[in-house]
Length: 162
Image (cartoon, rainbow, N blue to C red):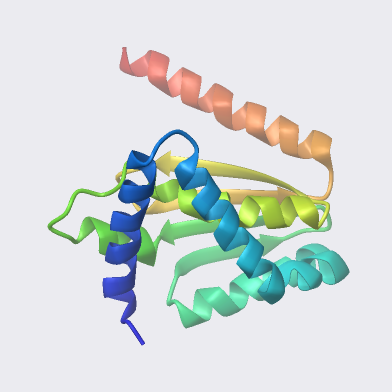
């Protein structure tokens, strides 16, 4: 089995290669990963909902030694990655990180969450810092409100920089 520190560096190079292949090729790659992940988690997400998603990521948190907080409420699951082990390993590399590396999680999990009937809002806090947040809602309106909140916070932050 390939060690994870080698795997994520390889993944980074695959992402860069796929992006060079043309518009939409990287997204197609992530969709193919998503299709394969259906076998591992789609039924769990559909039958157990947010609790099933919590259970899935709790296992990932332990197996991948993620510095992550999971918060489950009746209508939302929040994954707060304090230090992403994947991006951390990519940044500790002599190759340049793929500019869109942080999008791979949402690229494969988003379609699964949608197929399960839920709505995902992904907040890439900073592409150079291994932190992100993902909000998964049962209610579309709540997801849209969270997306607006994140977008407005970014706009306000950008205007303060200028």
